Amino acid sequence: MVSSKYGKWRSSATIKGGIILKKTFEEQMEALENIVNELEKGDLNLDESVTKFEEGMKLSKDCNKILEQAEKKITILLQEDGNVTEEEFKTED
Image 1: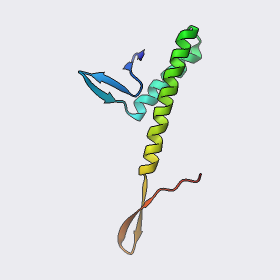
Image 2: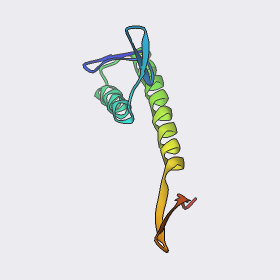
Image 3: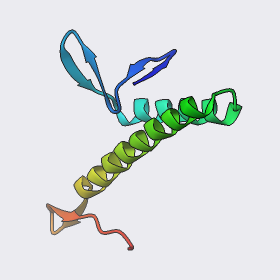
């Protein structure tokens, strides 16, 4: 769990009134940026740095997973003969 001016983070979710609330991608990126800034300052001891690094890696993986899921959902609408069709988004891998 990370404490910051933005509240307490439990990886990609927080608990409010007994209900788990997922953080948005933007909120997770903001938390990750805060961790990076704290690590870059160099004011943390080794244990705190390792803990922050682990939390940052978890957030990074969660953000990457969200991006991968979004990529899978992207469709391209094509107009053909007056009919709208959906086509899966293909990346250049």
